[in-house]
Amino acid sequence: MRYLRSSLALSIFLIPVLAAAQTTSAHAVKTYHDGGIRDLEAIGNRKVGCGRGFGNWYSLDRQIAMGKDYAQQVETTSKFVTDPVVIEYINRLGQNLVRNSDSQVPFTIKVVDSEDINAFALPGGFFFVDSGLILAADNEAELAGVMSHEIAHVAACHAARQNTRGQLMNLASIPLIFVGGGVGYAAQNLAGLALPLGFLKFSRGFESEADYLGLEYMYKAGYDPQAFTAFFEKIKTLEKQRPGTLAKAFQTHPQTPDRIQKSQHEINTLLPSREQYKVDTSEFEEVKGRLAQIDNRHKIDNGRDSNRPTLRRRGNSNPDEGTGKSGNDDDRPTLKRRSGNSPD
Image (cartoon, rainbow, N blue to C red; front, side, top):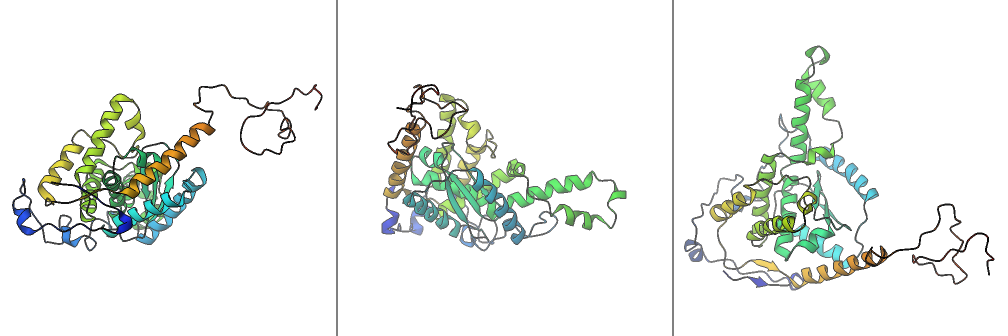
């Protein structure tokens, strides 16, 4: 199986595999044409869990409203990458994956200026990708795999369904005497509660479903699905070298011992092998280079290696003292005269 390096800027699309090539695949793949979750040709027209009912009390409009509220909170407490090249590339990559998914909502994608290896998508399609994740990926396919997993959580309305489960548990603990006009009334009130961020820590079943759907989405977009498992293998290795890495990476996504093996099995049995996949692009490498420069500037601004002593103003000092008359407004440390000294 050979891999091609292509540039998104040139819009190079890889040639589909001939049917004869699929029949000679190293593994047997069963194809489905029933419009269900395993029907690859029906992606975009399948029901993957967003139907409103007993298992999901949230309409898509309600999910968008909740996601918007929480996105505003994220935006007020986070620092974002402002490089237009990075922003445009990540948005274009993400929107292409969304087009090849079952999502019924539009996506808003932003890059968080953070060294954490993480990404998360709020209900309603508000998607945040940490720059640390982009730097940790070895190629575009690895990044696409992680982003597809997050898109799958939104496409399958996992946050809404998990929040509904929590509310059902709350209802079960309420004595019937307090239900008053019926469970439906109480359910309606509870369904109006804001989504707790804790509900983004999805159940093992939802994580497994997002893994599978994400593999389908990246595959449909032309990426090598093996990149998804390769990324998590790499994170596991990194955790051994730098303990605590995995604890930061995907904090809302519990790791299970069989997660990689299960994903590999699904790749081997449900996704027809192709001769050609998109693996990396020149644009991805350019974006990583730009983010690396930003990261290096942060290290310089934060004390030049953080091991050297830095000058700090006294807490009760006037912010205008000690700046001299040079008019330099940068953030470099300046010497402060003692209050008893002459200003000259």
